[in-house]
Image (cartoon, one colour):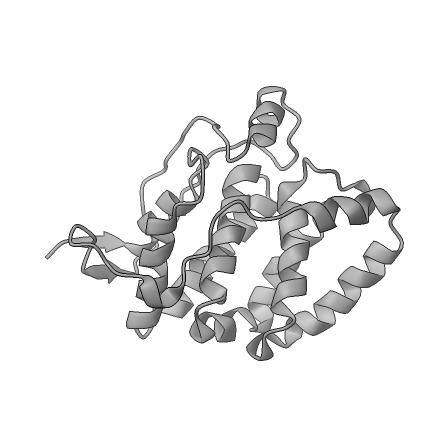
Amino acid sequence: MSRVKLSDVINQAVAPENTGFNQNKFKIVLKAVGKYTLGAEALKNQLALKFNAYAHLKLGEVEMYNTLCLMQYVVKRSVKLQKQLHLNEFVEVYKKVLFLVPFKKITDKNIVAIKAIQLVKEWSEFSEMFPYNDLLEVVEKKLSGCDSRVNHTIDISHNSFEDVPVETERMSLDQPRSVDFSTTQPVMKSESPTLFSYVKQALQEGQLDGGPVVLSAI
């Protein structure tokens, strides 16, 4: 029986070389969260490592953006993860990324900041994620002090992947049948391809905020 570390699957799912959202890997992560007792907690811990790495400029903009998209995908489908992400320890980690870029300075190049704001708005509607209601009030207060350009930039941004209904998801025969929740793995480095054409251009011109696009040892 083949085994794979959850951390490896997450890294593959959010790697910056992805030219789109890795739905197959997203679904494997979702399956692990639903199947294993410690799945949601293990995912939360892996996400926290990503957030801390990004806050210390050790994780790139595209990979952090992909991480937020993975979170969005799983949260929509897993109450277990919702209950993990409402814990104060994770909310505090989330704030590090959410407020890393001053709201008044946000442009369309700050794809992580924009996505983090959007998720606060989305998650505040989930009953299991009530702490994000308070966080939304802080976000809205900060946005009220920004000019219309910033608010427009946030409003027009959207996802580029199709939602996959949870009831249609199936594990293919070549997918791993068990998951190791160990957090250790080798250091990985990669080039910095992108998700969207505007991200690619910005990366080539060195215009993206958020530090070098590299994989950290998580």
